[in-house]
Length: 361
View 1 (cartoon, rainbow, N blue to C red):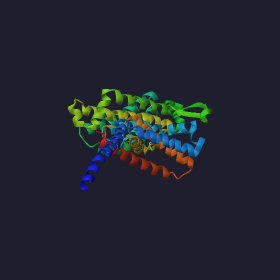
View 2: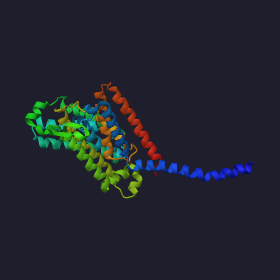
View 3: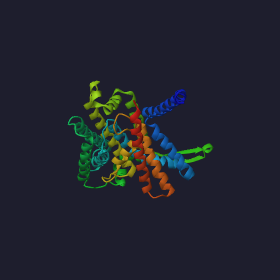
View 4: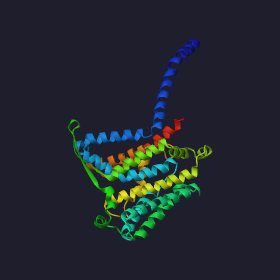
């Protein structure tokens, strides 16, 4: 009797084993696909979020004005997030991006009004200061070999204090900028585009700013550079395994310094956009840009362990935050629900990243 039972078990084994292997291979296929396309998860979440708020709010949310308003609101976060994404791809983190952004904007304003420089030269001075701050971060991380978290935390405090000391906590008013240095507010100028698509039930006026175009252009350029240039491949290699990258001929120190310097320059671009967004030069603006940029990066599927992710994913992450912020505000809920849901998304994004990394071989 036992022999017959054993033989029947053997006969049934070949029928169940292939099914298990098929399921396992399908699961691995999904995980490998997500590993190869890290922007897929935030894109799916973004589309689902837009669909849900569109159903709940109807044309109040799903309109050209509302959707382009989201783009306007996330433009600065998207630009700063691009700087943060570059650093995170190297397995680092930059807590000073927000402070560098504000200091660069203050330098632009002070050089134009306190020292009487032409506005174009004042802009260049702001870019130089932002790049210099990034360069110092890069040298301390790459040459001195200090942890990125500690370096940028210290730089954040130094730049923040320097910002208030240098500006004397004074704000340059919008009227003064309009009279003497209107180019400082250029990225905040609005472009209205009438849209009428009756077949989709969409009609209204889309409102863009030049900062939105800058954010999109910056994302496209960085995405191309990271994917199709040697420098971009070196950035991923350094983030994945710096020792192996160095053995393969990658100049790790030079790559790290270039990444942090470029991040500083991008923060200066965000500082220019910040002036256009708020209409003035304020040393107290953009205080949460560092946290918001990290949020966009994490939700956007860029691994905090480095070496995996995309700039496009960061942009989707920033847009997700923008969709939730505007959608919940239009629904009329307490603003704290926005922070709660974003916190859940951050933990979910990190969990997905860990899940993908464990099986992606």
